[in-house]
Length: 523
Image (cartoon, rainbow, N blue to C red; front, side):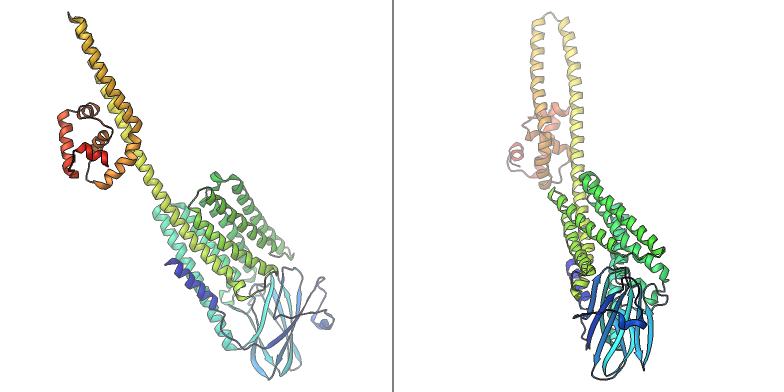
């Protein structure tokens, strides 16, 4: 059921942007301003390079990037929008010409009151018949990936509508997962659920950060804080995931090497975050290449820890391994898109969302599987403890019996010393000691085999006859070890009549058609 729900959400996410649009022909060219020397007034001197695609993807670059966009229209098209499907951009200057006059519009996360929509930047334009030329100057520490198109207000509203649904579903899904696991952690008194809830919460914030959620105008977040929020969320996603990995797989005890590697990655991630934040505050242009790389490396090691743990016999790691396999593929694909290696197809850009949701849900399965294993181990320990307690009771009874035998032996020796027929008294004593030796041999045999009897025989007997008491189960165990009535009475320090009564009661309870001894041997 949960997997069907997962695929339902994944399908919804994939169809959000699949609505049809009438696309106009765009021609793109770009130039990287290595010395920050180009200006719009001298745009004719900018050495633009033509590209055959309707998007630009050059990965990470600290230098300003200029773009020239030519749009060809068969007719006049007023009230259109120049759409830039990119919400994580420091600053983007858009130049357009209307009635012979050039106008500039500035948007971006470092721009106060930037008009940012959920599905990107929409810059109003009036298309003339024929060729229309637009210019963009972009500064960004994020990856330079820009998909461009011309759209109308209806398509703008539809795009925002679908993107808002996506954000709402992501928020709802993660909030339910976080609250559910917090509830489980409190009720089960298991801190692992708290770690997982924190993991899910940070993953949610990180995912929404990458989707540009916090940079939207309605969030009303100051541009000076947006950078901190986005950077912190991306950093904490790796740090908290590392910590969850360490705790879930108990790496400190099971694999010291990977434990130290994970701790080191957490340190590198935190240092990268602090370094990027401090340098950016000092005015340096520092990209997010390092954080992206650290996150990718972390995913590789998290995947490796799952493989090693599972191969070492940790069956709980199977869902963990499945989750991190999907997460690993999602993060790698997203990293390759941001590096400019993979084309930004809709699937490539959004696969990491499906991967993250899959990872979170599969980790829920992993925790459930872990809880089942803990309960199973707990029951096994309780059963073992009960057996050990029974063994202690047996030892105590044996000590009492031996003390009784010793007291009886002392009394017999006293009587022999007073008797006229010492030889007869000694023979009687030897006979008693021989019988006691046989009893001791039986007792030793019982103590050596009681655990096997308890584990194998008593388990079957309890399943067949749950109405038997602990005393009756002990008598059945002694019968299984070929104890006769007299030996059972001696062992339990009771009378033979009491043993016979118990045996009759047991036979009646279990409804044995044969003798009790034969039935016990057949179980």
